[in-house]
Amino acid sequence: MTLRSPLACPIPAVLAAVLLAIAPAPAAAASGWLAAAGAAGFAVDGDFSGLHVSCREAGAPRLVFGPFAGRFDMSHRHAVIVDVDGTAFRMETRAMEDAAGGTRFVRAGSMAEFAPLVAALRAGRAAEVSSPAGRFALPLRGSGKALAALEAACR
Image (cartoon, rainbow, N blue to C red; front, top):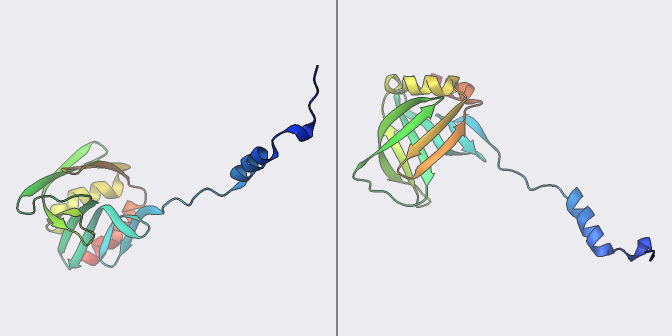
């Protein structure tokens, strides 16, 4: 029988394992629902991403989806479907190029037109957005507070 000394273990490998175990994990991107400057929607690191409602002029809201990589025909309408807890909302949008060279799908309308979708987003648990660029899920935690602030600004 051969006995090994505790000193015979590979110290660099053990040290590396210990350092990896105690090293802090990389910070995750902060995301959630945000209301700011006449807009409310899902944001990542303070930038709207996925879906937001903007009121640049009182009573003239716009639904904005994206940004998406790539370009889409800006002369045609594109269907975007938002499914909130099993209820689908379909709308025709226009593609617009954003500052980074990607695409956002935009629907201009009125608060009355958007009221059913906004109410569902405020009360819902999860949403899925489907567009010509693909589909993605959005959590709705915090959407009620953010969209309530927006509704006050859009009147």
